[in-house]
Amino acid sequence: MMWRFSRRFLLLNLLGLAVARCSSNSTYQGRLTIGVIDYDGDAEVINRYAKFKRYLAEKTKASIQLEPTFNENKAIERLQAQAWSLVFAPPGLAAVAIARSQYVPIFPLLGVNNLRSVFVVPKDSPINDLKQLQGKTVALGQLGSATGYYFPLYNLYGLTLAEILFAPTPKTLLEWVTEGKVAAGAISLAEYSLYSPPSTQRGLKILYTDPHYVPPGAVLISPGVGSDRQALIRKVMGEFPGVSAQEVGYVPNGQIPDYQYMIDVVERVQLIATELQNKPVHLFKKTT
Image (cartoon, rainbow, N blue to C red; front, top):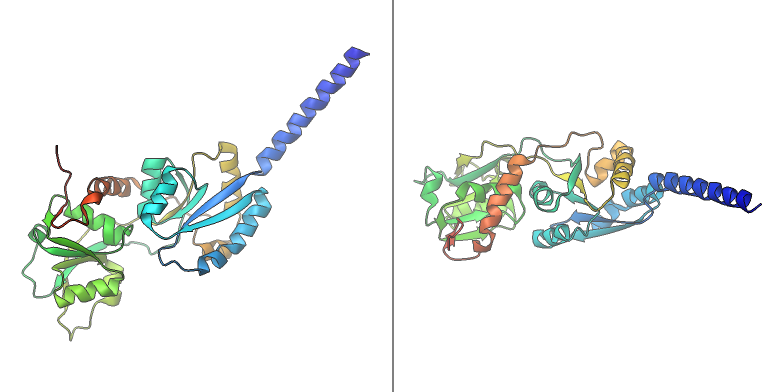
């Protein structure tokens, strides 16, 4: 009788384990924290992700927390701590997440294709080469911008500038260049075409165009999320209706970009990041 009872107990336990395993593969059963980069501090970000949060919670049975952050440094801190299960990251931050925190890109973000970074100068400027910016004041875009921050600093590596000014908007940057406040400014080619002043004004010209295209951003998943749960999240997000996915900015059936060059750019820029507020600005790694 005891043997018969033990055998039945064992079978029931094995059956319970099997059911639990199936259940764990079909639901996340935990908390998912989604990191969102919102440089403008726009309260609308909460509403924009509301439908996505409900969908993800329903399909994974997880508790979903949205954590917007408004600057690059805070975002990097959260990535280093692997505090975000998922992150919607622009190109530069995506490269940081991959190279330094082992996050895995799973979907591309929507974005402008074929983005290029350019340096612009006044049309009558005698400067014809990036090396001639040595000792000059240069305007860059905001921290984290691939075209206005990472690519330009990579291209200026090795120079010493008088000062770097960070323009709050592309339009402001172009005004600074036009007014002679700075010798040159870095911006995307698309922004230059959109915001450059009319031909009746002093006018600008492109000094240098980076030959590399900027990859789109990506949705990335933390290495701290187990492989089974990673697969579930990929499946659930891949089945999110296309129009709804576009509302939060990702492409469910899109191809993951190649980030290797972007990673190389970010890694070099990180070497000089602490120098950027100095006067003069030494854009090279100092030897001890």
